[in-house]
Image (tube, rainbow, N blue to C red; front, side, top):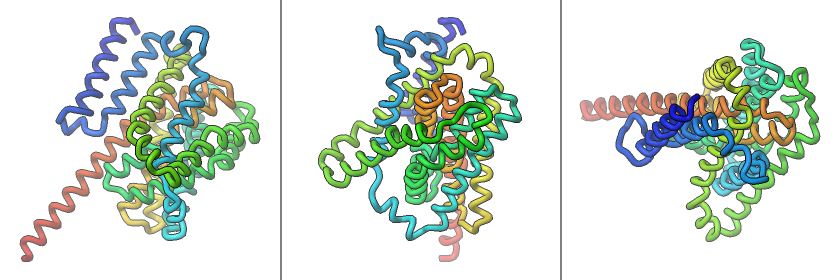
Length: 346
């Protein structure tokens, strides 16, 4: 990509992000963050030096602190009730978490095999599938008229289980591609994911005034952190990404689609209503890309393994936004038909 073409793409995506955020174009609503990610990706491909090092500081060393910031912000949105909800709706939450850790790792493995991905890239796709649900799933569930409390509880529970489930899934499915050290990965997840999550939860519970101030800026900082993480990953693996990008994009697309499909159908077979089925589908299909990137660099020590999260994340942002818009329109049309029937009856 030439500097001129890359600069034009950056400007285009940045303009679309601004229009989606502050404009009144309904078709772009909810896509501001997605376009911001695309603008960052274009910048990283065009000017990779900006995302690799500043002075003598290697920017990849900032990935783990940025992931911790994201999880700290997530913890600030949780309450004890989000975990206690398992006792009130155990079927839906346990089913969703089970599908999360059965469907996505296995589909990542099968997608990597089907597209013939190289060993470290394949391990990265399995890694993104072995991570818990992404923070964005709660927002997308709200836009899709899904069950937001169920989504929040599923994210919280799958995240708390990740120190055990993620290394186990990686050991079973990715061990043939790259060496997987169970204990170091587990400890890294505790340090990178669980500790900041618990810290945020405790501050929200015991320091509500501080929490109120922090929650004004943390969502924006979290979105900025995700963009920076994706930019660093793309810049560090630019040449490899240009070489295997189409195969990886195809594998990520299939992986993501299978997550939505099997998540929805699994919930439907279990007898959940359509609202909860939508919620489970989104929770299963959207992964914690920041965590996958942090583990790829911090545990697997592989920029190639991190490429999967840099591809899967933006792709799932587009598909989940489109899916949420479709489901929202379907829900609105059902409500309007119900209102018309009620008015006729009266």
